Length: 286
Image 1 (cartoon, rainbow, N blue to C red):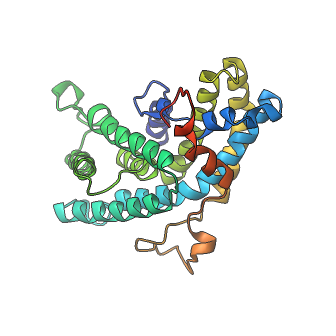
Image 2 (image 1 turned 90 degrees about the vertical axis):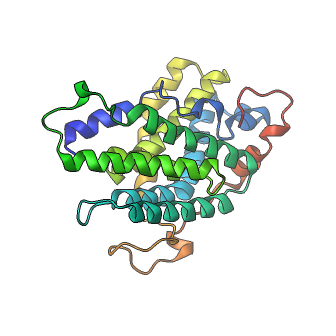
């Protein structure tokens, strides 16, 4: 993928109007506010502190899955250019393994529910919104037969993975589905990781505006001046993390679960998120 195409895909994925289901989840922020933690500091400081802690924990727990799932999908057809049904079946089996691990390490039911809702929404977005229409006006002379075959293979993978989720054969968690989406679109792993963290931070600010703890101008101010260094720092800190549950790449050596594996680093955030359903009134579903 050339730089212009990748930039265009980034703009598409950063569009806040995409139907990804993120508006139903606050990632524990609503519970954080309801329990009085947001009132201990001025609004800008409180929002920044929550985003920093949430990003650090989410990056450590989710990015290993984004990395491994992206590598699974991106490697399809990379050796000889042809994707067979057996390759797709093996890829889905790897994705199922990643989903099972993420399910087991996500401790509270609220986070699991939100992750699965947003995950399947991303797969639907690809199959209904990003797959190429089979209409003559969308076909150009530059489209090679190999590119069309690869696009068809990606659509088949997404549809079969989504079917497995509906049959409850796998979970379809957000980090795994995000990696499937971005790899199918040809987005690089580095861009996929960074954008995933950015969208997590942006969704927290959007939730803050809906909760009326921040105004829209203050949210944009934080998005411009505070979010980028936080996202960049966590992307750099977690770039070497893996799940360890699929075959390692040639660049992965001496994998240690406690050092290179996924982990939850903010217990308070987990507790508050788990208490979301206990609130008397709620704006968000999770």
